[in-house]
Image (tube, rainbow, N blue to C red; front, top):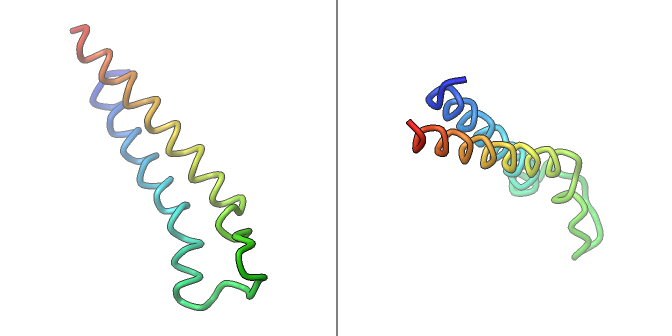
Length: 73
């Protein structure tokens, strides 16, 4: 893959990761999240949060690969 295409994929993964991070927070701010015990923080560590974390790590990894390929040209 060319470095620009890797950068676009990394950007897309980063945006998806940010969306997965922000969705539970936005749900809580809008009052749509279920009530839970104070201080438990379980909704912020949902499977969606972990998906956002993994997507963000993948985006960082792809961005580093793209920058190394660009430096080598």
